[in-house]
Image 1 (cartoon, rainbow, N blue to C red):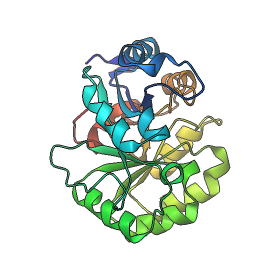
Image 2 (tube, rainbow, N blue to C red):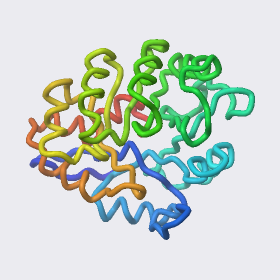
Image 3 (cartoon, rainbow, N blue to C red):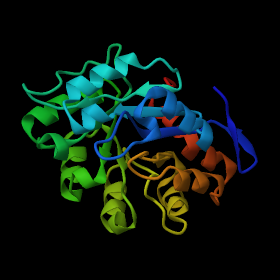
Length: 246
């Protein structure tokens, strides 16, 4: 693994939130593994946690199965979980990924239903971290979920400036909630989160190719934070949350 210079320090850059595979209405470079790795090189990103687009837009079991075909060690599989008897099955953490994604809006399930809470309790016991898009849930649902499974680490993605009041209340209440940088594009938003809640709760993520990767990557180079905090945001927090598996 290589490392890059950010604010004068050599650190590892980990994109916690990226998609591998074709998109329904766009010919993206990351439609295959070779193209995605080329994009990481272009953006000076050392490694990425990837969900397969077939798991997002089709059957999660099919998309999750395609993750086993990944050969490049810079790409780390992120399966999509669906609870219940029609879902993706249980989660014991043995030999499985340290990061998973939830898409209740796309796959039609209730985040605080009994099947979901049972599965997420298993995820929490396995010390697995969850990616959850802000657009997929309401603030009230996040509050109920984090309260019902208090040991569950959640990274909220795609938050943006319109969510700041609700998001701030949630972060004040639930210490295991984190945010990614994919849409924190407002003036000094990343700095504000890092200074108010701690840099350990902010992770570099792009959401690419669904959302832009150049903006968050440039933002990382220009963060007005101490070098140690910038290193945490860039990749240190991902390495910690994922147990060094990245």
